Image 1: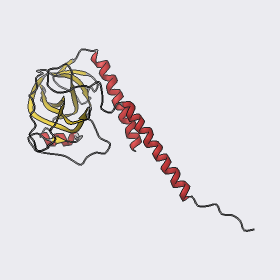
Image 2 (image 1 turned 135 degrees about the vertical axis):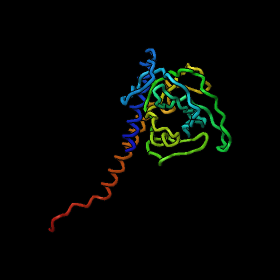
Image 3 (image 1 turned 90 degrees about the vertical axis):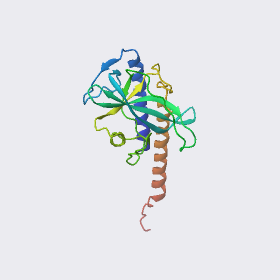
Image 4 (image 1 turned 120 degrees about the vertical axis):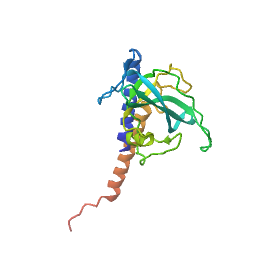
Amino acid sequence: MLSAWQYQRGQAKAAIEDARVAAGAQPARAVAALGTALPLGERLRLQGRWEPRTLLLDNQTAQGRPGAHVWTLFRLESGQALLVDRGWTPLPGDRQAPVRLEPPRAAAPVGLLRDLPTAALAPPPQCPQAPLPRLNYPSIDDLRCTLGEATLLPALLLLDAQAPGAYRRAWQRFEIPPSRHYGYAVQWAALALTIAFLFLRFNRRPAETADD
């Protein structure tokens, strides 16, 4: 299970990297509405307005520092809602300390549309109602509950690195690159095979022999 998940994460990240490279060479397509078939991997320019609702994708590190990704709600002209990842910011060590965030600066955010990130083991349902909620790999149901947005789309716009803003957006690189996920997949598979071999080795019944 863990081996397959690591391999799938490697494939997903490799696909995202390839999509970013290809999308970066294309002009962004202006959208005021999105259909049920979301154009994942496409570079979009959103038309609408920012909403004063922000949450943090918690427990995200960058260069060994703890922090979070800043997700802010954007309202398309159609009325649909979409979260925009404005980048990574460090967080104070004291989780009770207030976190000060800057408002969005990009009037019409441009970025790559991707699916929501997931974890190997899905966390229990989350619906924090704090002024600045912190979530760990939330599902779309978690996000809709937390934000009170039934129209929230199950996707995330990664704001362009060159767009105005104060947060780190090194989208071309991952803290754990695809190659490392593949390495982890091999390690987990090897461990599973070793455990299976040892189980069979020490639990196999000796062959019965005929009496002389």
